[in-house]
Amino acid sequence: MKKSIKINERDNVMVMLEATDTVPAGHKAALCDIPEGAPVIKYGNVIGYAKCDIHEGDWVHVHNVRTGLSGKLEYSYEPVDTELPASREEASFMGYRRKNGVGVRNEIWIIPTVGCVNHIAESLARRFEAERPESIDAVVAMTHPYGCSQMGDDQEHTAMILGRMASHPNCGGVLLLSLGCENNNFDHMKPYLKDIDEERTRFLVCQESEDELEDAAKLLEELIAIASKDRREKIPASELIVGLKCGGSDGFSGITANPLVGLFSDMLVSAGGSTILTEVPEMFGAEQLLMNRAADRNVFDKTVSLINDFKDYYEKNNQVIYENPSPGNKAGGITTLEDKSLGCVQKSGSAAVADVLKYGERVCTKGLNLLEGPGNDMVAVTALAAAGAHLILFTTGRGTPLSSPVPTVKVSSNSPLAGHKSNWIDFDAGRLVSTEIGSKELSAEFFDYVLGVASGKPVKSEEAGYHSMTIFKQGVTL
Image (cartoon, rainbow, N blue to C red; front, side, top):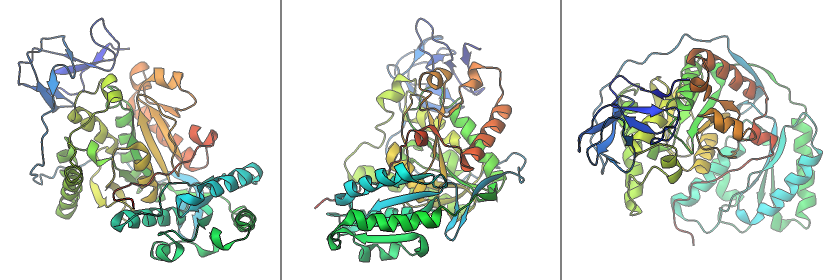
């Protein structure tokens, strides 16, 4: 194993693969003298500026580097050629064909329209999860604290996300559970339920039921009877949609896990499939690279709006736009937001950006899509599921037991994490630096692994029985 790596020939820092007496593993050391005020370059791009003179071999981190970002920027469209690997048109997975699309799981979801009935949903899920037939993958309560005392767009976003969940093709059946007096009642939700499969959807208003648990149980039994007859069939990879997310990144994330996911994204797009990149604040500092990959001028304009609208959201709430990276990121070797973002966007590979989605919108264009959403892990993975992702690839250098409404593959950036948290991590991308395996070989293995997950192989969070959903709270609570 090498002791350090220079990522790009333009770089004036290297990343330490092994710790030294002065520089921790995953952190940066200067390859040459860097005068005060001079740019610090990693990934071939500027990640900040020296706060003081930095000498060759010095540890390069938050104590001597500052961000170069400030305020909103002007952007220009400078399109670049994009290149994809050879197509794997024969690639396929075993999934479910349903009226509302292709699914990779056969689950029963209990979705409260309001947080007041969360405990009822959880009680029902526990009962039916314990007695479900083998043909049903899980019975899940998709709880959340919203659905009442919300106003305007905030309320509409809640209704929209719940509607997207109710029509997600990973569901073999859905029970929508209402209290009855909430803002987000069934009448209000009607416009957001137009894509549901009515044969596989049931509704219950708890205030109108003498025994809501027994009435709900009868409805769930109906749904399970329908879904238990479903069988997997061969489906081309061109119909697969995969979300891309990272959390708890470290200095290895931009070297191993994120580039590996980027190679997967390119392979899936080349096969005719779709991927979705979100967490807009972690595009700040690398957004021009994505803009230059826009498929056309319209997509470029939508990408500019995506970035600037999120900056406006920060300013409207009197928050600093570039208050990032997190303490965990810094401990792992990420110094500035530029450093974090340039590593983060590598999950998108090299494909052209085909479309840009607002929060709550669904993928309608094949290829790489950008999605409006925050960096918060739980909100972002829910947004990806609502956008149509069948499963999510989640890279991490620190580790997390995070789950989402859909299978969430945890990809470790370093091998020690994969060994230490084997109950969390599904795939070890750290092998790119801890073994002799090359990126071409590992990406082929990873591609096949993901198709296996799409075909029913459970990920670690599913084995633990974890599912979660978190909606983006954006407004006043009454």
